[in-house]
Image (tube, rainbow, N blue to C red):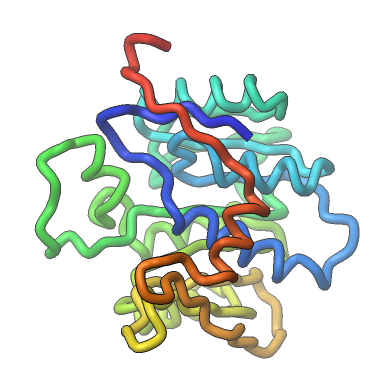
Length: 245
């Protein structure tokens, strides 16, 4: 798959590919994956497009707040020949109105949201700020709104800063999102986890599964598992100045 990305701006990275791999692993137990899929904060569109390509019975909807990325999501949907209903707006207040409804409308939601705490030193680039720091989409609002738009037993996959795991657990319980699977990402075997992948289902009662940790690097090279993820995703990026597109 080919993806245009901004030369000076937020670009997808290994987080998105690792999250897609996590989604695939957890969907293995389900049959006939279909229905409405929402990608929150689609950026260049990669996560939703990877999922939609893998599960062609899903109807992809992509929501993005930044206009330049709305354009990129549309462009990348077109060049990869995947239908996507690309929406422009702020997830905190967006009214979806799909089939005349704004609640209980999505079978699956995916997101690589802005997850760095706002207390962390922030980039001066406004584009990067919105894509990286959670003051542009606080965790509680992300989970509250997602619970509202998910159908009963609907699935939500996201990744987040592992240091906020206690908040993830608290707000998931508060908004009836049952955590079914977790996976921790470590930069190296002897390093602390930096990222967590989370799979929840609305109002489910399944017990939690913790997948084996994923290690990114062995010395200075990707581990074999990470190499396999990159090969499986098979993405190629072209960085361009936005005015060229």
